Structure formats: structure tokens, C-alpha cells
Length: 255
Length: 233
Image (cartoon, chains in turn yellow, blue):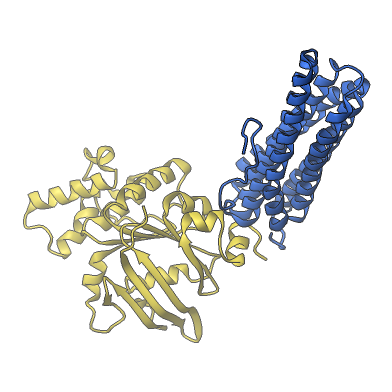
């Protein structure tokens, strides 16, 4: 089911790293409670793009952004935006699982505690349990919550990171190649989880796997040299793309 | 169609190989159909035997194509134009095989025929056979050229195939009406006519598959339909 509600809207988004321009006039609508996959060759700007959505590029001194990104119609490319609040509503999962060197429990409770989401221990216990359940990890770790998160398998660590991301009730989850370090079984578990999570969250996933984009997303955007070349329903992109460049890329013909 | 080659050369070769086999299969089927038409009109029983025997070659090629397609699907997980090419080739090879079967079926009907076909029935049977043969030749050309315009033209011409079938069948029915002793021959000829018409239907299927391969969409509108044998309109 394709929704028509636009959660994130970018207009004429340009990003520069010093002299080098990384994104050129990107206009892209991300629909609410859907998975949008971003594909394109390495260095095409996909990761730069998603890092604009939670203003993560702010930490790079030489990075300059102009244009507009609206989330729920509210401009976020604005010095007055509370970036901490913004990141509370936008979770992020990276290519390599990066749990904190803390217990499984603390990995989840860290965010809610700094955002003041729990009044007491029992509230926090509930948040931890719910987040782990939503990330389909609870059954595997419920008896060892005090063990270090780093002791879990790669796939479990990635689900722990997803649980950590959703523990602060975000609205958007950004995933930057979340399965590229995982085996097919761990990948399948994450993909199953993405299917489940899209009912509650808007998800943007960067992936180099065409078949993963087809499996998990409802919309796909193709980036090339910092420009968005084509965005459409995933079915259209992979069955009958409108742009020759998209077709050449997804069929492995790129020169 | 894409003008740029795949980065992986062996993928390119696999698709080329598939294409070559389909063309090869197409020309075998073309020959089987034209041989069967000639054989039925001449009541050439020796030619009929050869046609029946040659059908195995078509089936063999179809099995090879099917296996190649399974390999491409599992190895390459084809996308977009490559996916449509793979799926369409599978469907087209299946339709070609069925046309081959129908040609064989026509050949099988030759054996029980008396030596001469009544002159009055030959003309319309020949007209129908010629049209279906031309349709098959054209659709194979259209496949080679990846021409959607030709595909649509062929698709639309099926209506004419239906009309010629209608005429041919009515003539056989009249022939039967003249003398009940004509029953055996008439029955065989009705089957033959129907087989040729069905070959035409498979050509229409191929036109649809080809259009989908080229455009990524299905031909719009209902299939053109001519008169039925039993309709009076």
C-alpha cells in the first residue's frame, strides 16, 4: 500500500563539503510509514542525503547546506531548530553495528534516560522490553540484559542498534546499509523487522543490494553524481524504470 | 533496448545465447508450420512423417531455453529490461513450442486423409495457412527488431485469422452437408483448421509478450476478435 502522506520533503537541497558539491538541487518526497530505498553508485550522495535529514552533517565543519528539508511541513535547515529534539525523532542505524560498550539494558535505556522519557525504573524496564520486542530481539536476550551488547552476534548487535533507535519513540528511522556486514539469515531477520517497523515508522534505507531494495521498499530513489535521477514506486523502478541511466545502473550496465 | 553492454561479459553472453536459441527455435517452428501446410494441401504422407519426427528438435530446444532461463534467474536476479527479456523469452518459447505441437498435430491428420483434398476446400485453407505463416514470420522479425509497432500490427491481424477460420470451417460444414460420406474427411479438416487458428492465437500471445518486453506494459484493450465458427454475425 502506497501512502500519499509526505513525511519529509526536500527542495533544491544542495550540500557542499568545502569546494566540492556533494548534492545538487535534490527534490525528494519521503512518504509517511513507508520504506524508501536510496540506491546509486558509491559516492553518489545517498549517505550525504540521509545525514542531512537528522542534521548529522552539522558535525562536519566544512559541510554547508542550502535549500529546504521539511519534516511534517516544518523546516529543519534552520539555525533555530533544536537538533537534540530533532534527533530524538529521527533514529539512525549504520552499516557496522555500533552498540555502546555497555550492557544490553544500558544500550537501550541510554537514550530514554537523557531525553527524560522514564520516571522510574519500572517505566524504564518497560521501554527496554518494548524496544527489544519491537526489534525482535527480546526473546534472545531477556535473560541476559546485564551482559555487554558487544558480546552479541553481528545480526543481534544490529537489532540491538535498531532497538536503541526506537527506544526514544522516533518517527523516522534512517538506515545506512544496515545489512552489508550481515549473513543472509541475519539479513532476513532485519528485513522482516523492517516490514514490521514500517507500520509505525517512516524508514529511509540506503542499500547497495538491488534485491534488498526490491524486497523491503515501496519507493526507490536513484542517485547519481549527487543528483536524484529518478524516484518512483519500487515496482516501477525495477520492472520498467523511466530513465535509461536508472536502467543501466540496476541491470549492471553502468559504464 | 539498452545499447550499453553489461559490465559482466558472461551475463551478456548468457542473454545473447538465450536470444540465439529463441531465434533458432522460431525458424524451426516456422519451417514445421509451412511444411505442415504444404503437406496437408498435397496430402503428402511422407512429409507428414518427417514433420512428426522433427517436433522433438523443437521440444529439445525449448527445454534448453527453459534451463538457461532458470540459470539466468538464479545467477543474475535480472532487473528491469533484463527481467522482462527473461520472462518474455520463457513465455515466447512456450508459445513457439505449442505452435510446433499444432503443426505436428496437422501432420498427424494427413495420414488418414484420402489422396485428394476437394478443390473447393483447398483455397480457403491455403488462405488461412498463408496468413498464419506470414504472422509467424512477422512476429519473429518483430522480435529480432524489437519492434512494438509490428507487434501491435500482428496482434490486430488475429481478427483476420478468426474470420478466415470461420470461412474455412463453414466451407467444410457445407462440404459435409452435401454428403454424409464426407464425415471422416470433414472432421479431420475441421481439426486441421482449428489447429491453424490456434497457432494464430499463440502468435498473438507472442505479440503480447513482445510488447511487454519492449514497453514494460501490457497492450491496452481487449484482443481483437473475429467471427466464431458457430456465430452467425
